[in-house]
Image (cartoon, rainbow, N blue to C red; front, side, top):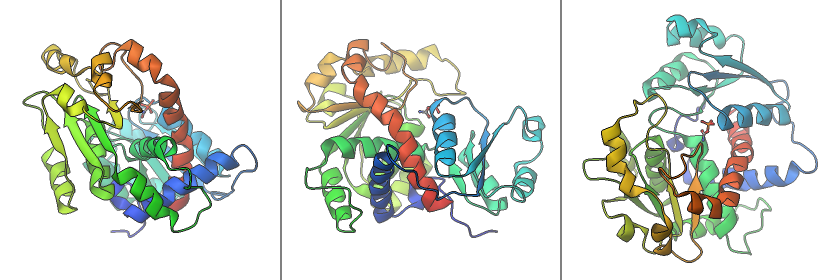
Length: 319
Ligand code: CP
């Protein structure tokens, strides 16, 4: 058993560490236009990807280079892992070469097993259960847009209260499947305490482990089967693809989810200054109407850019 720090879910940070990460993300975003921090100088960081990725892979890889580290990308197809070498053995070997890894894989237990035997820190780059790096980029994007003017990014400790105040007052509504993005919103809500509504069809529910982990921390969220009442007075509306990576294209499931598309009528019921987020890739006219996506595309692509800044801040904390 090793005792290094990992980031396998949002719960690996305290609320204050989440706020610190958002503040540091803002500084790193600003710094990128000028000088660069060298906080990962000399570190060799592995990226083990068992699933496809555009944003996560490139933003982590670029982030490592920008912080002075050296990324080593490994698709599971190229590793013996992809031919059945146990996760445990892979972790024990890579531990001797690398200073940390980012992993995109299937079950959460797979990354947890890796973290148990890898003697350096591990960051979750998406599992079937959670996508914690994405959710911190999402809440950073929300904070950038909704923050009060007095919340200047000067790194002062008291700013955590201002960030907390801004975020706690928001109503965030997620529409769609009970997948790793829904779970990630549930975990973030338990840490930060905003109002969270999950609009999904009858018969859909949040994974029992995710629910328990949230309840243990005093988390609260509402599941609604009525899309329009869920959208009422929302500050943020968000969704994800209806069929996640690795899932079968079940027609029955898509048919149930189809009414939960974010369309113009959904947006009309939210607050006037509502913002729409999507982690991408998007299926236009499936989970979100094309005109809604186009209206908010500047926010969505800023959210994608923010992956880079936020992950640099996470890597500074963890590696
Ligand atoms: N949002 C996200 O994780 O994108 P990728 O699958 O392209 O990494």
